[in-house]
Image (tube, rainbow, N blue to C red):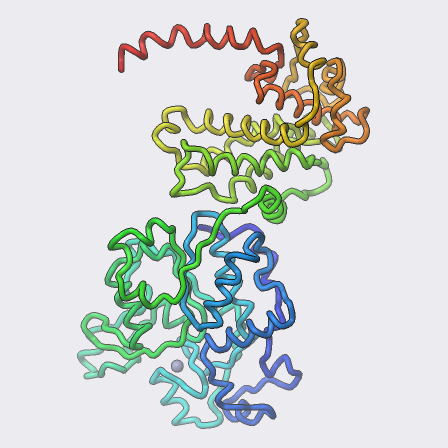
Length: 517
Ligand SMILES: [Zn+2]
């Protein structure tokens, strides 16, 4: 999956910075200077990345900091489990469906690293100045002693991420040796001068994340296990010693991970914790995430207002889809569905505003239908769903969502006068390109309708934008509950003719369908 929206906000800083540089004195530039800083402690300076994270995490908890800023709804479920895994110095895996903030959580681990870390300058695997593992660095220190140059590595560079696919090779992850040079030079197993390092060694003293672990070929899983277990590995038959210091974190779809044969047992055994992520438990949690991620506040040429009930509808679509039998549950329905839908709702309203030259505009239910392209691609359909088609399913989900939100707001309201208006022959058309005031005038004609817009948070019944959009939502809700009829072109009328029409439309299609079955 590509970078998450919201990532551009930059990693929020926690108070986990503890390097000497932030303590105020000049940063050491050589090994000797590093040793001479006042509070220097060789053991502390050489602590493992898991100990570093542990200590910074404990400090953050003691200070009551938000551990994973921007992650909502996991405070009592996922976060405490991750904290336990980190305090235990465990490698862990997040098991969850798409769009459950797994990548965001893993990237958030960066906040538990020191702000900067000293490394031997120029080392490809970020060697610890006091415990170098590559031969190049050991030789350098032997030759240059205390004047060996030190570089400071910011924590953002200590996170390495890889999406596992079947074609990922050992060379990608661990590294490669040049067999000709190795043979010619008579170089032995630990002669790293012939190695081209892969991603994992480059994540040394940092965090290495592998997404979709089950897609990684078995022999690379074996390689990973060997590195974790013994710190050594064979590449092209050449044994290689690499005692790396890495926090390994993974993600996987739960079904893939538990499927037999997808993960080699010894690797599974070395993953300290399996942590299940989940979708938002409540509509409110979902709306919080969507509001945070969706690009809604745009430039001010045409101001778009999205009423709260419409945000509820957008979020409810995802909830409906996650429950719908025609939508594949193993793939799940990502939180990106309501996020992109909300963005498209705003864009649809923005378009209308631009066309009609309106400075401000209120988003309407019609804009949710206009957002269909943001919905259809985010659901894998079961066979039954495929037969109906993604568009039809998406429209049904919107209708169900509108129905649910309508019920929440109007549980005890009697709409008899509105329904009667239609039954007495009233008809209403809301053409796509009518202006806000044209639509309002149409809607205001319907007896008893505007009386109820207050329940949707509209205080001024004469506000054409807000009251008009709310009135349209009410009609849509009545249609969702089959109290009135509605055409594809957004014409509303009494329920009965619709039923007749429907039957007539279905009739001609039926006999041939039977024959072909
Ligand atoms: Zn090195």
